[in-house]
Amino acid sequence: MEHIYELAIIGAGPAGIATAIESYALGMRDIVLLEKDENHNATIRKFYKDNKRVDKDWKGQKVELDGSIYFMDGTKESTLDFFDQLLDNEAVELKTHTEVQKIVKTEGGFEVFIAGGSIKAKYVVVTIGRMGKPNKPDYKIPPSIKNQVHYTLDGCSQGERVMVVGGGDSAIEYAVELCDRNAVTICYRRGTFRRANPTNQADIYKAMSEGLLQAMLNTEIVELESESGKVKVVFSDGESELFDRIVYAIGGTTPSGFLSGSGIQEEDGKPVHDENYQTNIPGLFVAGDITQESGGSIALGLNHGFAIANYIIGLSK
Ligand SMILES: Cc1cc2nc3c(=O)[nH]c(=O)nc-3n(C[C@H](O)[C@H](O)[C@H](O)COP(=O)(O)OP(=O)(O)OC[C@H]3O[C@@H](n4cnc5c(N)ncnc54)[C@H](O)[C@@H]3O)c2cc1C
Image (cartoon, rainbow, N blue to C red; front, top):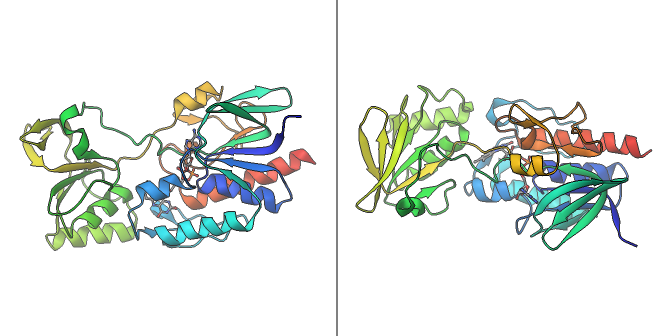
């Protein structure tokens, strides 16, 4: 007979892991966690710089933890270790290299489609985040400079002129990280870095005052061109400057294709869900960043996981 999991979770980031661990802690067995990358927490691995400070109250959002997972401030590395330990301590099956394509409602549960097959489960929770598709600018990026345009710090080195685009916490952290070995300019369409958390604001203003980086505030980019092997950045006032590299840190996008392919309704750029994070399809839930219009946080994802675990356990009794 074909195996039917009690719970399938799509995406092994903080929200997915929390849903699995909290469900297990509440007595649920037969849980599978499906992750498309080679390991859990692809967003943390790819987008956080090495030794990055990880704030529990990210972007100044104070979140009281509801569940049994005791998450604290740390670094990228300690946070990954923390999630490793959680997964090692509980009998949750993590299937990596497993990208889910769509979820189909069946009689009594769901069929979760992956390359070359499918998995059946009674309940499904989608926690695929928003960083699978980092936001890209509206203007076209000429193919000849594609290798000099980035969305993470991968590919950056030293002794280069680098422009970081964005003014949130990620952009500031990238700019400050790069500026001790590169000539860095941060370009932001607003006039201040008020949206960033206090530590990052202090860091950027200190780096600016020490002349370690330049800030172009109230500045819009309208075009990128290729010139003599460099990236020519053209601004709305008609001025332009040459850089070796450009790094965009402007958030991520709701994976609308995935949601609509699975029949999950969307409204205002977010999947529709009730107070238990259940979508328009009974038994199918969403949690973590995917439920937020713009960036959530690790702690928020942990709380979503706890809430869903409690609700599903209640349903199964
Ligand atoms: C640069 C940066 C710095 C940040 N710093 C902090 C911080 O200091 N503190 C903090 O609290 N938050 C921080 N955040 C935000 C935090 O990382 C997110 O809120 C959190 O990771 C969201 O968790 P999630 O589980 O919803 O999604 P994600 O962490 O994005 O996890 C989604 C997972 O799903 C997988 N996946 C995607 N599609 C599929 C698919 N089709 N099939 C299977 N798997 C799939 C992905 O590979 C990924 O592993 C930061 C974010 C960024 C980008």
